[in-house]
Image 1 (cartoon, rainbow, N blue to C red):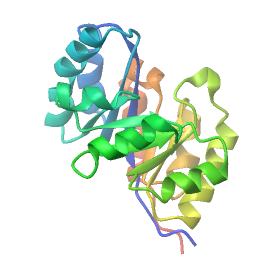
Image 2: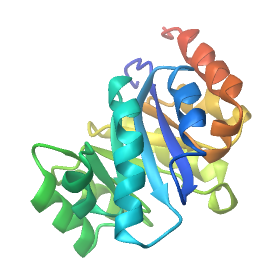
Image 3: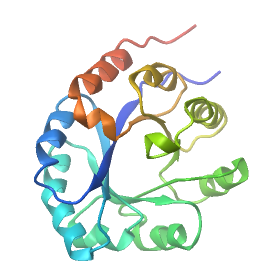
Length: 207
């Protein structure tokens, strides 16, 4: 039996090309629930633009007592004053992130294509594993719930189960995962974030 866990929210931004348009959405999202992390993603490969966006958005995230994370760019973490990085897969970039960021900063991993890969990641200093796709069009909700429930039942390393629709939240919230990830579409309707939080708040331990 999985111990009762009341998960916190892990917000996944859309790919960003600037901070200005997204900042108001971010502030509303942060005020709508118990947000543990915000994963910042970028629509541009330009390092200077990425740094500018991250430095503009990170203070609001951190002032809300959430962690500001960046996707697949460990070098940006220190340059932009972020709290850590989320890495896709367990290859060279993941190993480099662990070497450069741990133990001071957060390293999470997703994009795991097998249970062996997940278990290999869990044997490192990683802070969490994420199950589900970061983009809605790539996600399979049933598989995400299956993977999340499996991991939460068996392993101690925290995990994130990603929802891209409101109706996916409840099952993930009950799965034993420490975090429920909310995809980019939730930023367009903060009431859906508040509803997800209300659902989590209403969870009760089962006998």
